[in-house]
Each structure stands twice: as structure tokens, then as C-alpha cells.
Length: 460
Image (cartoon, rainbow, N blue to C red; front, side, top):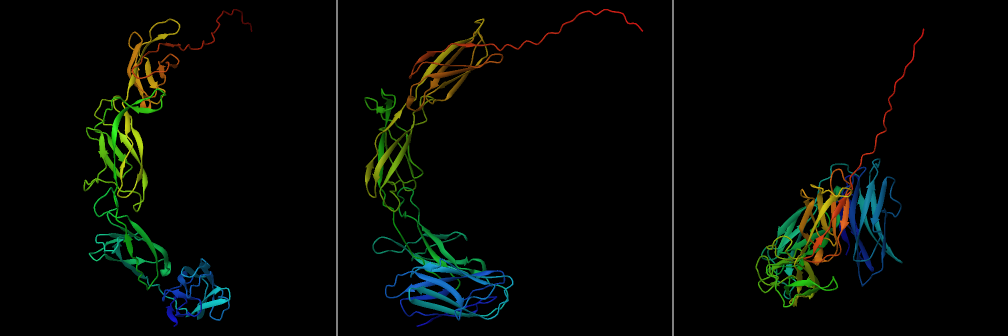
């Protein structure tokens, strides 16, 4: 049975297309109505369908109805030019601004080995305005569970243009008023997304979002159905304990006996947050329903989660905890996973004091700016020398997990050169002494002027 389609063009391509469906594959062209203006272009969707399991690639070409080349001023481009049965290509017919129009018979030919199939059209030029075409998409959203129950309240959306609708009790939706390309050119692989409470832990009724695509062609209403996978949460928790830096200066080990840390904040990226209790325990819960649980990997796959733990902020500054991270492996749907203990090292400091004097006179230098920084990565502390040149920095913070190292002292004073000194390696609680001698800046001498007397007699 032959398939008929009318191809209409402002400049040409207003015709009846007949698709021959005999043989191992067939070729068809849509939409039934298309437009072409001088200096413009029109696009068609060319589909190749297989019969009898045919799967060889098919090469597409365009010509006049009698098989000769297209007239001057018209060009045809297929994207792609070779397709596999069951897929499609875009045919773009471009007209030069000088194209005179007139009657035209168009043929699209598909060739695969010795097999040749065609679809033809008769076209006539009829210059005028292009009427814009809008199309709709409809479909049904169901659960991917056995039985496939329809899902209500699912948001189905598109971008460019941005439109969204919500499914009804029967899971059905329809998005209308979708525009096509220039001169109603088809839009290939147009994306549609369905989402219902995207997972933010294990909110009841949460589903993984799904995206599909379809071709938008004037005169067609494609159906795009979705099956959404419900989130099956996992249980994830752990314990926060106080830790201390080991003898190697790198490894963190729990203090003995164990000391739980209450009020610590455990976070898995933007997915979940929990707070440790008096026993240092935390368990991730849904932010809306407060149900225990956390979403596994995308579409209920197993995933390794990195848990970041920050200490409570109730302690005084420089007596808080360094953050720690642990990896919870194998967070799978329905699993109960215990993350390794998070060991938080309490921050500690060292003190530094000293006297700043003139390197020549040994006189004290008052009002000098002193900046102390632990080279292991702590922050900087500023102070100023007193009238006797003395300074004291009572709390210099070490780097992450109290990594030991020297403290650098930087001293500046107008009229003196800047001086840096470093202490020996220091650890928590160290009382360091770092005296500093500043070298006075001496202005260069200016060359002197010689004065004398000149005597003599002036004569005419």
C-alpha cells in the first residue's frame, strides 16, 4: 500500500509524496506541508523503514522526479547522508534568492546495494507568507515497577521553548504550542524530561528523573511515554570521635579511651546532612519526611559516598576541631552501611614571644608590626611591640590536624629593613622565644658643596 503526503512550498514543493514500501526497506518524507521562500530553506524528515529484518545502510540522494539533477538555484543536503533502517535523516532544500520557482518534481532515492527505493513529490512555486506551525507532545508516565501504575503529579518539561505540565491521576500529559525551526523545519531529537520529587534522600514518592527525545514535525503529534524508577533508599550512618595526630605526624588515631563528639555536622555533598548525638552517632534522614535513609546511586545503583564531618562550632576559636572525611563504600538500595569512624582532631596552638631591638645599639624598637604564622598551614596572628620592644603571640594555630612545624616571625618597622626569623619545629602547647634584631635604614650621603673666595680687578 502506498503512503501519500502533500509537500507544500511557498516557492515550490507543493505536491503529493508517494512512498513505495515494496522490497526490503521503504523511504518516506514528511511533513505533508512544507514551505520554501527565495533565499531560504526548508527541511524535511526522511525516514527509512525496514521489512523482513533488513539492516544494511541506505544512501540517500535527491533529484528531479525524472532522476535528473535539481535545477539551478536549488541544493539538497542530507544529514546524515547514510542511514540505517529504523532511523531518519534531515533533508534540507535551499533556494537561492534568484531562484525563479515554477513546477518541480522532486524525488528522494534510497540505495542499498542493488535495492533502490524512492519517494516522489510534485511541487509548484507559489510565493507568499509562511504560516507558522505548532505541534504537541503527549504521553503517559508510569512506574517502572511491575504493573506499571500511572503516576500523578509528575512534571513533564521541555526547554527552548520552556514549557511544563503535570500529569493527572491517569498519568497522562500533553504539551502544546511547541514551535518548529525556521520555515517550520523539523526539530530532530527534541528533549523531554519527566521528574517527580527528584531524590533528596528518601522522600516518600521520590523518583529518578528520566529524559527522552522525539522528532517534532509539522502535522504530527508524537507520543513520548516514560517509566520512572522509584528511589529505594539505603541506611547510612557512622560515629564521630576525637582523634589525635600519631607519632609519624601524619596518621590520625582515636584518643584512648574513646571520646565521642556531639554536635558534629556530617554531609554528603548536597544530598544529605546529619548531626551527631551525645554518643557521637549520626544517621542521615530525609530533609522533608525525617525518615531515615539516603538515596543510593543514580537509578538505584551502588555508590561510594564521601562523608565530610565538621566539628561543632560552639568551642572557642582555635579550640575547635579540624574537619575530616571518610568514605562509605557500597551504598546500595536497601542496604545498611556503617561509615568508618570520623576522627576529629581538636585544634591546638603554640605561643611565641620575643624582643625586637636595634641591631647596632641594642635599643628596643617599639611599635614594630609582628606577624606570626605556622608554616604547616595555620592562620596568621598580628601584634605590635610595646615600649620595651617586647611582643607576645599567645595562640598560633598549626596546620590541618595540628601538623608540627616552625613558626615564621615577620617584623616590619618604618626606618628599618623587614626581618624574618623562624623558630625550631614546634608542637601543640610549645612556648617559643624568637628575638629579632632590626637593621636601621641609613640614608645615602649627599655630595657636599665647596665654597671659597675669588679676588681680582676688572679693567676696561
